[in-house]
Image (cartoon, rainbow, N blue to C red):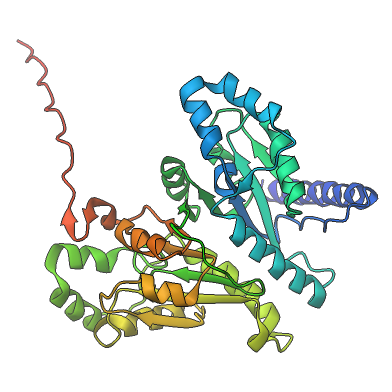
Length: 368
């Protein structure tokens, strides 16, 4: 039986490889000026929603006030007018720059970023989205337009490494499916970002790591956390929802290091954590080491606000699980992405958010 399964798997792999070669040849025959998308199995796939990539505030207003038919008609009437850039736009441009550098060093490599537009928009809206993508010369060839249905079920089929949306409900669904995801927010003011280096900043607990330590803080206080972290300093923390994305970034960074480009690497990663270095920082760094991962800069703030440090870093995206850190970053011009994971979702600035009371269950009548 196992021999039959192995044979079937090999046949399927052979068909997939044949299909990919045919698709590659068809794309090459188009003589497109845009680079060919990488093979999904080898790529780091970033799925972005249309409202994350482009600003669609007015269009959203039309949808809410006048309904889906007027919304689709509005896009069709304005399909030659490019949409304005949204929160993920600078991040996508930075991904494209990394790909350009990788292609210079590895002309035949498929280990690149692949950007997918993942949207529940109607296919007729796709014309305006395509025109907008071409207007800005974005390298986005793969689309998923689900006509009002949630696109979350397609994320694994597209081999997604990171999903970015403005819809927190969909983001939660993606995380529950085991896919790194975050809800993006536009900053309250615009600041200049690097054109040559992708900068990604991560919070630690409940983002790269599990919420184990945050549970202790919330339930027992900081002193209990310091004691716990000292006791378990040499035991790696469990992984959080964004660990795999940091891993994917590290894989691409090492390709630059292999070409002696460490000091000129177009990817730079940051850990920006509210932890105290002396009291609880060693376990974090040892955890990263145990995973075989590097972080370029580690900033331990011991409870100080993150906004001023992020203004200095100017990341293309900053991931955090707590909305008050997101709000502080937004105020100072940082493009932020909320990771709705862990015990922190039940709290606001260390205060427990009141949960709605569950209706009491009615007792079923006893049988006589």
